[in-house]
Amino acid sequence: MLVDIFFPEIGSLNISQVEFDSQALILHVEATTKNAICPECQTKNDRLHSYYYRQPADLPCVGQAVRLQIEVRRFFCDNKLCSKVTFAEQFPALLAPRARRTARLAKDQQRVAFVVSAESGARILGWLKMAVSPDTLLRLVRRAPEPMIDTPRVLGVDDWAMKKRCSYGTILVDLEAQQVIDLLPDRKAETLETWLKDHAGVEVISRDRGREYIKGASDGAPDAIQVADRWHLIKNLREALESLMMEKPDCLKAAGEKDKEEDISTTSNKTATMPESVEQAEPSPAEEVNRPITKAEVQKSARRARKQERYELVRALHQQGFSIHGIANHLGIARRTVRKYINAESCPFYPDGRRYRSKIDPFRQYLTERWRDGCHNGSQLWREIQEMGFDGSRATVSRWVTVERRKLPLQEKHPVRLKARKKPPRPKQTMPWTANRAAWLLMKPEAELDTKEKATLQQIFLADEQVVEAHKFAHAFQEIIRLHQPERLKPWLKNTIASGIEAFVTFGRGILQDLDAVTNAIKLHWSNGQTKGQVNRLKFIKRQMFGRADFDLLRKRVLGYHLAFGTVHV
Image 1 (cartoon, rainbow, N blue to C red):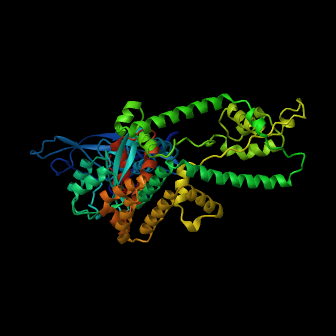
Image 2: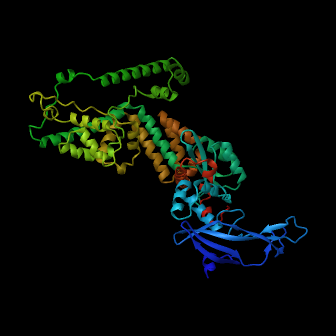
């Protein structure tokens, strides 16, 4: 029967008529029973008072929207002790009181809302003939019941950004079940402490090395084993190496010199195979001295002079006994800058020739090929890559053309001018490495270094012996973590702090303050890797929500994802 197809789990209903208009399939539904139960006193009554119609939306059928037209009867309640005089019959398995959609339709709409959020969900449901507004989907998510939280044995704790650099929250993950169990609105120690006291029984807490989380975990669950995150330990080690290399400009310059030697050897090999007519003479010292100084070079020289003067002033004030805080307030600069100047052997200038990312990068290969084919017109090149999806300005392409045109021989740049005069190319300048790049090289396992990297590393070692010692400390610490050897940690800390390398002394003292958790991180297999993955999922959900990521709504979606496949409250 038709009623068994449309309402397989709902008895006592009958489809009296089926209509179809331009918008929906209409099913006329009525109850087959002769009596109804009063919702107040739970007694059966069969004395009819009146009837009316309800027209809720239902699940679509064969690609058509479905609307029910239910005949609802109203009965007298003959129980004299009942407060109700009349009551309407209910259909709890099909429709909630005053609802405008069936429970099964609301359930599927809520599932979509949990998976793809409101705006996208409304579009998808419109295509599926289950039209609903984004606001209604948000209400369905908010009405979902709170999930039952079982106290986890192993808890992962990490922070996440509500608004980057402005406000942060805390995510709590059951590492054994691999499931988010709660979101906290901030990352304060008191908030975590309160949660842990309300959910007693946590045995292991995996966390990063933030002070607030250390205090919150220690006060909220003093008997729990705390485990520091190994990824953060390695990250802090690399930051210590980077801080050290910022104080060693000679080492960064030495690494750049090695790159220059490689480039010169490559260029000489290419030049040996080129025809003599293409070769260009090296610039003579007189020509280099007489070269006019550009405005940009004058400004750069002035900036370097001001920075050198400030560096010398900071060093002088420090020698006179002024504190870092006092020097920073007097000169109006950051304390971190003052500390960097004090620890540096010479003024730490920014490396020359550093290249930043550009919109033109994805099209650089195409432009290079067109340039080699002889197309030197910036406007033409800009129009061509515009058709390929480039959304930058013509000036961006013009700047690239200007740089490439400088590399051309004089005859191609200025064919009308005298061909006899040739402007020699400028000698390649040494570009020092950045401290970040050098730190990554020092962290890299020796077995993975290629020949060029080994040579560069030796150049760095020759420039400063302290870097050799720091390199040994860094690899020893990585080996302790990789091989799970906690017994080697205390001797390593003792040698590191006694070395006098400021960056590693600070790193070692930080580990001493959290020694038990770091030891557990080396000894146990628990880590915050699963928590980081859940933070990534949280960010994905937050960015899905088109600006509607209020904390209560975001928490519902992150925690209640499984509710999309359970019961629904309309």
